[in-house]
Length: 301
Image (cartoon, rainbow, N blue to C red; front, side):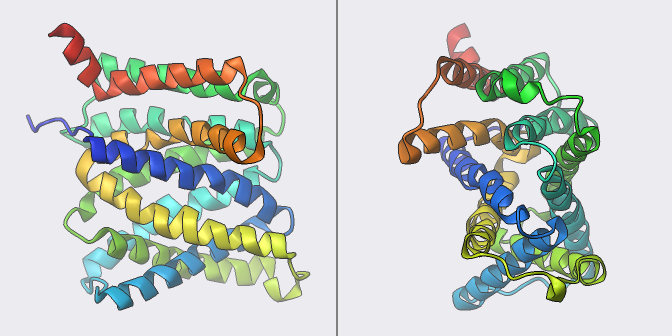
């Protein structure tokens, strides 16, 4: 049997950075979709991010792969990891609150551990890993609070859209393992370029952006932050972790995203840290420790 993929200390640090970058994406998206249609926001996000990464690659002397098979893979990755989930989440956020969207997004590791058990040889499901994922999800729910759960049953289609996005992210994480050996920046630029090509005709057909009112500076800034921070930089880190630690470990980031969002609110906005936040963070830490396995192995020794 292949060795089980594990997280190094450097991988955990990158995962925390990724959670901060993606933690801000829910806020930026909420600001953007207040003024722009979801498809247009999704296109702007991937197109601007692709342009930034292509420029960075040119400056760095890197080149995109030329093989047709690689670009076919980028197209699949762009569809299931960008075009579908971004559109579903942005549309869902026009009908439900960001807190509930975060909880539904945190189902991604649940889908991932089940799919990875079937589709991979080195990310097998174990009772400890499954228990860790369940405890981590419980921690997210406790931390965000019961008010968000009160929305369950309302705007059901929007909630299903967010769940479908989480499932699509899980598929993307597993499928993305095939790009091992490629530079993370090249993979990110390739999938985002493919996503742009998919979304552009849909936006021109359905949103007709030339007929939309000009967005405010706040909306423009939110889209720019989504593209530069939560997409371009985030996906370079994403593919680096994926190549070294696998899909199941990578997508644990969805447990850390609410933690990052709350701590940023405390540090920058002066928001209060409630007891349920501490309880939820403790449950998430316990779940991540169970999944990582090292604390349990040390305890046994």
